[in-house]
Picture (cartoon, rainbow over the protein chains, first blue to last red):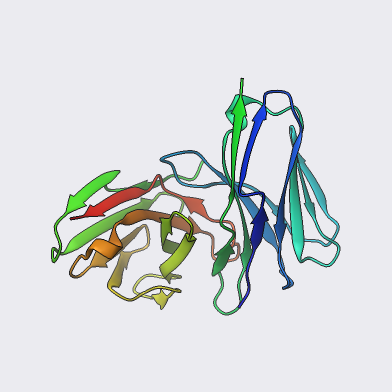
Length: 112
Length: 113
């Protein structure tokens, strides 16, 4: 069974700090997605990483896919209160297309 | 922008009732999905559909059925609601060839009493 483990589960920081959250697996994934979910809303797709070693930037967010395509990280520079939310990583599971496996998420709180 | 809408944000039903949750997307996506999200368990796939009238079971289909009569609409049916189906239900859609890039609706928080 493919699993995605996210760490840390919870993170509470002050505005302006940097942080990194991790998404790890013992399985190889053809791609990984990162989503952000705000309370009471559905997840919103942030990025897809496909190539081992790939780095993608989205303003203050930097996403990296591990060389072996088993792990990924999300780094936020100078966090702002608007970054608060649940960050989920997801990867394509085996079998039918679109069968995404989701990690349980990292709940980030950025205090002003 | 892709828009996925769900028929209700909050719903309270009694045990044994038949419950319909509707999802509509406006971007002509072939794939549509139903998930439930529970604390400590994350998002789990219930059913998905890759075409009109086509459906496939996800990881937890027991107690649920689905219907897709039109491309833009995907319904989740709880035939006889039970308290363990109290959850947040999320619908998503995606293009045929980018099924892993899913666009989610706002969710329906269902409480079964």
